[in-house]
Structure formats: C-alpha cells, structure tokens
Amino acid sequence: MVSFTATYTSITGQPRTVKIKASDALSARRLLRRRGIKADDLRQDKGKNKAKAALNSGSNASVGWLSMDLGEAFQKPPGVKEKAIWASKLAALVDAGVPIVRSLDLMATQQKLPMFKKALTSVGLEVNQGTAMAAAMRQWPKVFDQLTIAMVEAGEAGGVLDESLKRLAKLLEDNARLQNQIKGALGYPIAVLVIAILVFLGMTIFLIPTFAGIFEDLGAELPLFTQLMVDLSALLRSSASLVFAGMLLVAAWMIGRYYNTHNGRRVLDKLMLKLPLFGDLIMKTATAQFCRIFSSLTRAGVPILMSLEISSETAGNSIISDAILESRTMVQEGVLLSTALTRQKVLPDMALSMLSIGEETGEMDRMLSKVADFYEDEVSASVKALTSMLEPAMIVVVGGIVGSILLAMYLPMFTVFDQIQ
Image 1 (cartoon, helix red, strand yellow):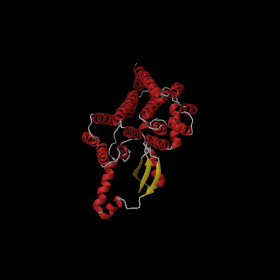
Image 2 (cartoon, one colour):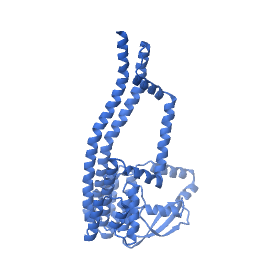
Image 3 (tube, rainbow, N blue to C red):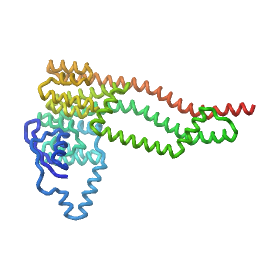
Image 4 (cartoon, rainbow, N blue to C red):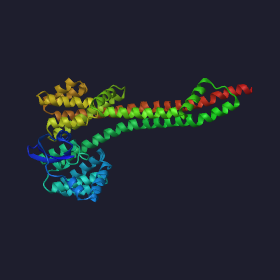
C-alpha cells in the first residue's frame, strides 16, 4: 500500500487535503470517489510511511501493527440505528451550545461499539487541531458514509450544523424504519420455511426408515407414495446427498461471486424487479429512499450533482442506481432532472410528475419529500398485504409437509389390516 495526498475543493469553495492509502493512483482516485471527493491533485507521498518504520524498529512493533489491523478487521461498524441515535444526540448537544469537540468526546464515551468509539475519538482530536469535522470523518469510511459526511459538511458551510444533524437523524430513522418493515415482513415466512424444511428432513431421514423396517418385517406391500418417500429417505442418507449439498454450496458461492460483478448485479437486480409482489415492493422502497435522501440533501445545501451521486448509492438496486447516475450525467450537460429520469424509464410516473412540478415551482425538495411520504405509506401497505398473504401460505406449506410424512407412514397400515382380516 502506498500513501497519497489528495487536494480537493469543498462545497464552500475552500481547498482541502486528505491522505489516503491505496495500491496505485487509480485505486486511490476510486476510493476518493466513493467518499464523494473529486481530487484536483493527487500526489504520492515520497517519505517512508509509518508501517515501514514500525517494521524496521523490530518484530514486536510488527506484531503490534498486525494485531491492531486484525482487531479493526473484525470490529462491527455502526448500523443505521446507531448512527441515527448519534446524530440526534449530537444535534441536541450542539443546539444547547456545547462546543463541538466536547460534544464529540461525550458521544465517544457513550459508544459501546469499539470501531465507532475509536472513530469519534479520532474525529474529536482532528477537530480540536483545526480540521473540519466532515474532513475528519472522511478518514473513517467504514463508519461514516457519504450521506452523513455530506450533511455534516453542508451544516458546517452554512453554520447550521445542529439543523443538518437533526435532518440527518430524521433521515436515518426513516430509513431504519423502512428497512425494519421489510425485514419484519420477510423474516416470519423465511423462519417458518426453514423450520418446515428442517422438520421434513428430520422426519424423512430418521422417522421413515424406522417405520419402513417395521412394515418390511410384517411383509406388507408398500404403496407407491410410501415407496417414493422411503427411496427419498435412502437417498438423503446416502453419500449422494452430501455431493448434492456440496453442489448447492458451490452454486450459491458462484452466484455470490457473479453478483459482486457489475454485470452480474445488473442481471440479478433486473430479475428481482420483475418478481411478482416483491418486484413492486423493491421499486417502491427504492423510490421512497431516493426521494427522501435527495430531498434532504438538496434542502441542506448539498450540490445537486453530489446529491444524485449519494442517492444512487443508497438505492439498493443497481438498475435504479445506474439510472440515477446516467441522469446525473445528463443534468451535468444541462438537462432537467425530471427529463433525465424520465428517459431512463425506471422510476414510477407519479414520482416523475411530482418532480417535474417541483422543478417548475422551485420547490423540488418539498415535492420530493411528499413523494417519499406517499411511497413510504405504499411500502407499509404492501408489506401488510404481503404478510397477510404469506402467513396462510406458510401454514399450508407446513401442513402439506407434515401431512405428506404422516400419509406415507399410515398408508401401509391399511394393507396390514387387510392382510389380518
């Protein structure tokens, strides 16, 4: 890894510098772009970095650096809920007139997550030395995303940091609530399905062979359905089942690797949008998130191009994300945002119409906020409808699985009773 120093211009027009480590200059620019920084100048540091100095100082220092890196690698970054609570408390402290350095120190002492605590302590030290809070937060990309950094930077530029933090807290809380609704809707049927599959495998592997041995000793002829279940039980207990399970794991791994590529993500995300019931829910969720985040960013004073780039990263679907980025390029060339998004043919017509009206009236952020409210209500209604449909479907699936096992075990009994008579 090589150390680079990048010079960039903040949204207030002031020149700033940031240090970053990467394998080469191209990778460094990519990392900066992910942080929302467009470098005006990028230079490689000529001096030896601290890691090499530590390695030259002795083996004990090497072990220390290694253990520290491994410790950070396994630390859990803060989630949306933790960052929402942090932003809300920090906004209250700043609004009460507590100095920002003191506020950051107080927030650091209250954090239970080691990575979050370390990041806040580091940001507080940097701010105490005269660094802007947003610039200090950029040193911790695993903790602070572009959305958080942009809102803080806009608040610092306008002298309304407390207001920006309140908007950020509200935005993160809305996103957390939206995610929890979807997780709650999908969590129950997935849990029931997993339990049903485990029950089916347990009864097929351990229970059916016992009954099959009893019926064989009695000399009963097994019905076709029972024989099929006995053959399935023998197959599951053979080595072929392990081979099949291994093939499933390899297939899942390959799909995961394919999804990590840009083309693979686009193909699978496009299929997700076409799924019945779930595709419409994904589209409504992405539309609500885009409208809410873009509205909050523009209202806070973040430039429209940066707002579009940040919004694209929070869409949750690569098809929608790429459409927003394509629209960003068109806006940069002078095309209206509503026109650019309409050409992409991704977002719903109602959202595009409201956006066009907002552009005409000069209240785009207000209109998008209303659109976000509408689609968040739509997501809530869709989640309730989906849950009401999935719950009886899961009951039918579980009943069918248990019923098929019981039917396979009881059918031979009728043959035995006929022989006795």
